[in-house]
Image (tube, rainbow, N blue to C red):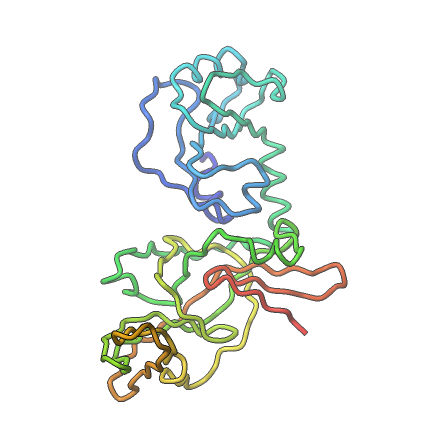
Length: 294
């Protein structure tokens, strides 16, 4: 039985969409899927958002340059990664080229190094438990058994502004508590609000929520989760309101008696690293908060 490359890569945290394959002629090189939600670690290994993933298939006959050139003639525009699980009889540093196509080839040693280093340095853990896909529609996105894994935002400007290097940090998961809070916000006028509040190393009001379809296999680190949050304090705000004589600042108080709360256990993708002085930090990827661990 041959190795299921898609299953292995998914276990190692690579997000692969296996729907809508490109139209190509049958041959030695076959399509596996399309890579999405690329992490910084995978980007450093040459993976790109929307990259088409291919394999040479198992066999004794080597993958030759003529075969790659023939396949490349039909390959769609964009970036492509071929995982060559059979031997390659040409120099992959001099791969064939075609306008509008970026091609990268992994030989078996490259693929083995990707798996080995990921396991050895603790960034990724391979387990046997099957995970269920999570529906992304807001109406039923939290159906089923939690914890649910929130989709991170790929914005590392907070890290860069502090002179920290995200590529040297270890990807982790941080447990948290997510609340959907509905109720009345009372000020000069009364408004109905529907807010997401994340409880993880403090309280964070989020504009929107998305879930990962398949949880990454990462180790967990913990930040403080506050018990019994006071949503009146969290959601009350001071903001401008026009009363016909210019904008004035007013308090808008959240009415705790009107609140309807739904709570969910969640896991948040994050990165853990150290600065030059050896101080540990955790960058939480949903609220984009940097936590210094004393």
